[in-house]
Length: 74
Ligand code: SF4
Image 1: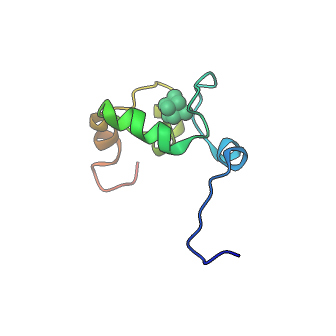
Image 2: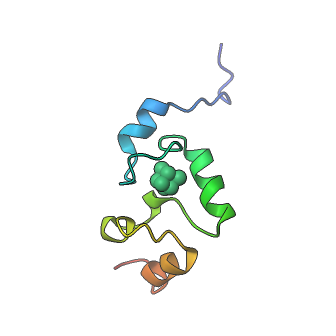
């Protein structure tokens, strides 16, 4: 019986909603690993970038700020 605090991730659901265009990545759908990997390199997951920027594979924090730093809207 669930106490309301149990959480499990669904790899299948994550893969369905993942917007990263790098299909060969072993972390695809494993969002915690994706975030850890990129943050270690001062980057952010591809899903946080608009599609045209995501496709450049520049996942740097600097690029993120450049895109959204002006108030969020592009
Ligand atoms: S954002 Fe990076 S780690 Fe995450 S699925 Fe795409 S290439 Fe892999």
